[in-house]
Length: 414
Image (cartoon, rainbow, N blue to C red):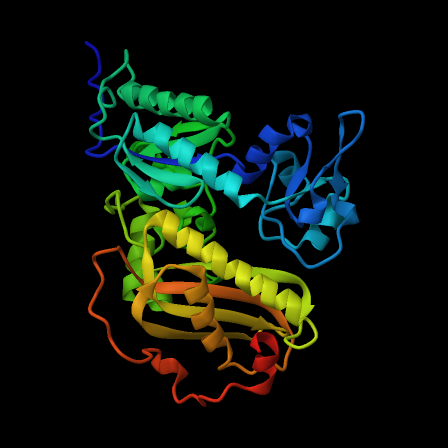
C-alpha cells in the first residue's frame, strides 16, 4: 500500500530575487566580462572606452580614489570578499584587478519592469519589494497544486520553473526563487541555492534546511539583535527555536521576543500585498569630495537642480503630485540635517520643487562643507484626488525657525 502524500500547505508563496541584478545587467552590455570579478559603483568617468580596434578598455578597481561604495558585484567578485555597501577603497585592497563600472539606474529600472511583467503573465498576484525582488502568491495559479508523480510539490516546482524561464526570455537574466508556505521562509529559501536557484521548502524541512542557518538569515534580525543573541549563545535559527520564551522576553521584551520565537519556527501569516502607495519619493547623491556652499557654488547648484529635475521625472512617471518638499544634508563629520515645508497646492514640476527645496535650504547653516545632498517630495496624491489645501508649514520639528536666510545660503541661491 502506497504511503499517503503529505498535504500541500494552504498557501504557496514564492520569493523571487534577481541574481546580482545590477552587475548582471552590465554583463548584458559587456558580455566579454562574464566570469570575471566586476564591481558596480564607479563614476561616469569609469565608463569603458571603445578603442579603435573595436575592443573596450575597462578601468580596474585599483585605479579608484575616492569614498564611493560598492553598489553591487558579480559572484566572482564576491568570492574575493567584495560585497554591496563596502567602500570602494576597501574593495580595491581585496580585489585590485576587478573591473570597475559606473551604475546605470535607468537601465536597471528598465529590466526591472521587464522581469515583473514577465512574472505577471503567469502569476498576477505579486508584491513589489524593490527593483530586483518580489513576492508571488502561487496558491491559486493553475497547476501549482497538482502533484507530479510522487512529488506533491511537482506542480509548484513546474510553475516556478516556468517563471524562471519566462524571466530569462524577457531579460536575458537569471533569478533565484524560493517557494514555501509563507513570506519569511521564502525570503530565506531564495538565497539558499543562488545563483539561478529553485528551492522548495515545507514545514517538515525546517530541521534540515532552516535551523542550521545563522540567525541573521531571518529578515528582521539586524546587527544589534544578532549580537545580543550571540551573547546568549544563540547562533543558529535552530538554537533560537529551542530558546526558552522567557529568556527571550527577558532580553528583547514581550513583542519582539514573541516574533523571534515564531520566526524561528517558520511562522508568518503576512499576506502578499499587491498594492501600496509610497509615502514619499526622493533623490540624493553623495559627493566624491566635500563641497562648500560658497567655493563650490556652481557645482552644488548644478547638482541641486539635477536632483529636482530627476525627482520631477519620477513623480510624472509614477503619476503623483506632492505637497511637502524636503531636503536632506549630510555634513563633514556625518552630521545629518533635514528640513521641509508643506505647500498650499501639490506640485509635480522641477521648477516648483527646486524653489520650495531652496527655501528649505536657506533655513540651514551651510558654513560646514557638505558630503551629501538630497531632495524629497511627500504628502503624495494622484491628480484629481487632492486633499483640501492647508495653510502654513507643518514641520513642527523645524520650529521655531529664523525666517531670515543665513548669508552662506544666499551664496548658493543668490
